[in-house]
Image 1 (cartoon, rainbow, N blue to C red):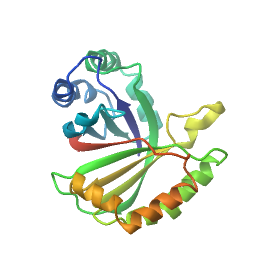
Image 2 (cartoon, rainbow, N blue to C red):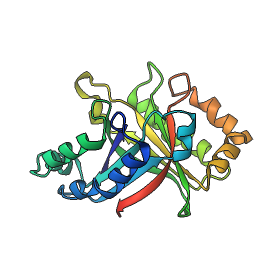
Image 3 (cartoon, one colour):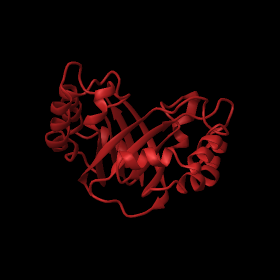
Image 4 (cartoon, rainbow, N blue to C red):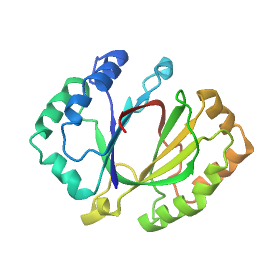
Length: 223
């Protein structure tokens, strides 16, 4: 299967609580009318994080389909214009971005219902090919990151190679999804010696600097 990751910000002036309520309770009505939706998740940025200013995104949506033909069927469906119209009610569509990915499960542990999910957006190191980036991320960096203490689940979502065709540059080269019991568990992991190895290896395949990320609560809409 393939997965569409949509990263989004709320419409200007809209309170966060109103945005999250509409997204979770009203928007699924139009998404689930699209043909071929196999799975659908929403991950909402934690309300507590807004005390420090707005995060880079208010959340991400993940939609799975059988293949790229099924994705084209969604965009060509008579239900698609209603989806776009509803997005305009609560999303800043000008800043909304999409990447089409394939998942690689690095660690598949049990996730408690009240777990938090960190979403990190990756850009590969300049001069590194897509193939070399994906290979290093999967085979070298994945096992290093999987050793973090407190990590419950770890998934790499690799941007599909077709996104780079004809000189195109996708918004991100991939997204890391990691689940922890709490925000305190994330902080503990970042203070552990294992995290130093994660940071050291990041320089081998990622653009220098801190990768943007958000900490979220996941909501399963279509299982």
